[in-house]
Length: 242
Length: 242
Image 1 (cartoon, helix red, strand yellow):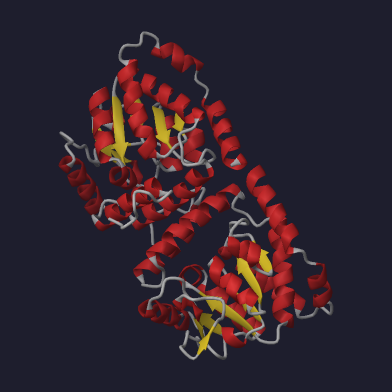
Image 2 (cartoon, rainbow over the protein chains, first blue to last red):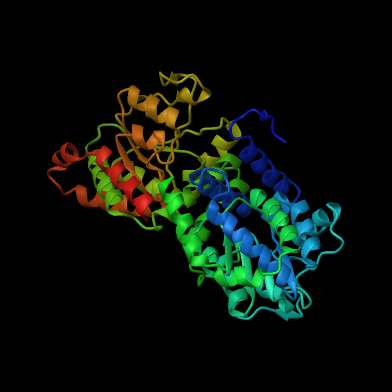
């Protein structure tokens, strides 16, 4: 960990960068993931490094979608595992979803490292990609999934996802919730619900809303009202206005 | 190299990211350089990942400045060397400039790795920082330069430069051409000519303009007309408007 003092104005951002760097050292995060994180930092900076109203609206819809899902899955890549292992595990437990590993740049070693990382953080079990089930609409090796996880899921929570894969999931008839700091990305535009926020800020809020939604009798009404396009437009305006 | 298929809509950006990652593996690029690259990706995304008119205008002025320079130098850091070694060497050859290494985070090993990398890509020679010549207005170890290179230069092409160093070069009476995707950075605001574009797109265009300018009889008139502040304002408007 770095020697940045807690009083530094950008302490949270620098601590988050530390977590990603530690992920690389542990074999959980790819070097490419580090660059993607840098890009996220820039977008977060432009958004003022705080959770905005459009993100809260998406978080609320995501909670409603997760508690009403028949077979939700929490999909985890190297960056998500490095940044928020505990919250991802807690979210999966709260909505009765398995955790499944799915990474952009193929590496069996890294898949195993992410699995160990999640198990060490208290995950009861972690599904891995298999050769027995594939996603349609994808020709890369990123199409391999678990038959009882992503393959059978109706709702997938998949933060920091690639555009091609997000599109393939949606084309397979699944509802996709993502977290992406770039409201213009293909992932952001393709997902069913896009939370434009830092995953380390969004996950605790999502957990809180999932707990609140358990006692709510109208999650479907909220989902019917939700307009992801409107949320993305608000996010892009905020990004460009500074 | 990665397994990203050529059909991926963001193939160019992902290939560029690969080049930076390969640079780290080869000891040419620093880990800090990776995060900086990620930040650049975000700005490039906001600009639509294409060369805009304000960049073409700056590229034209840069070509005029380079062909009229008495002692031009091409300054190379770890990110530039990883992203565009061949184009940097071709540019130096086209304008009769030496290549000189100058990096932000001091490392003799990395300086040597960049030098080898450029020599392998066909550079006839590469100048290194020395203790015999220093830049005024800088107190860090980034002040060391080569007496026959940056120290004696009138025009310096230095893509992806740090703000402090750019300022020190300008204060030393040198004309500075930079490439920077953030039109609001100190480097962008301090340089004489700022090309707000991805270095991998800008360099081939600059090479083309340098060839065209050779047969031009009025490069000075073009330079007299050029207004970098106007170019930066156009770039910032584009960044915010999309």
